[in-house]
Image 1: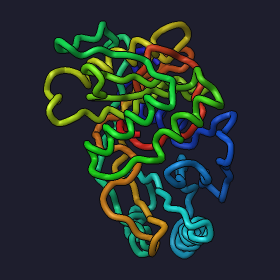
Image 2: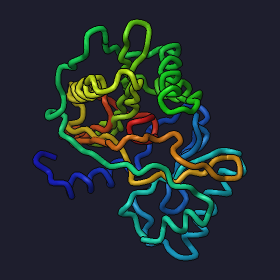
Image 3: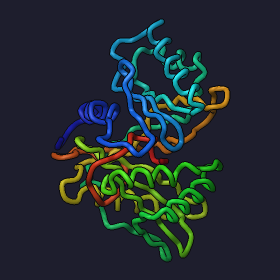
Image 4: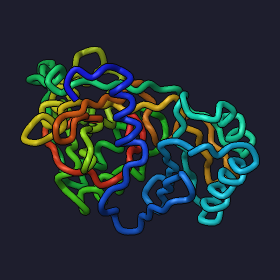
Length: 296
């Protein structure tokens, strides 16, 4: 998608990623359709409701569609998120979600960039190194770092990363920035099969290590990875305008949960995958649906 304008890139994002379904899912996870919705359940961290658009569903029919999702997850005792974008129709969708007990999370922004514009040799401060990680122990170290950053336990994170790798190791690249034995920043990139995108996730950095170019280095590294071989030509750091979340207790949850809190969601389409929404120097296929902008 060379020289594509903002509208064309956003259209590609909507068409290729918003209702993307992996070829295979980790054990225990399911994906099923309910009208215009694609519902993921059974995975670490809760469920997700995705859609390209609502296909004209509105009014009482929309309320019933929303309540069916609520009942589905309440019966399982799981929290879940409805992936809402600010340009979704009908215009009263946010009010209807709130009426059903959803709580909006932090506002985010979709960012799309060509891989060749952001891929670069990572530049790191002295004493910090970047390393691709694949082991459970490293995923647990990343989760501990994320817990420090966000102030909430991310015990589901190692399960999520490990389960995705078990399905397709080439669909995900996880990068940790380390200072000695300490993980100071971590981020990953997914490669959704059949799309022009790579997607960037994670990106949390310990407060004392911020403003030193470490996160920027993980973006450059992941973009370079995405540009290797037949990987995406563009990167997307995902961030939707709002996530509407319901927790398993009383069906409510405030602030942000598992999706990112960052404002970037970059993706760039290329002849093969085109866009990248994440970071990692590899290409490949993705195994799980987008789980939030640069946070998970």
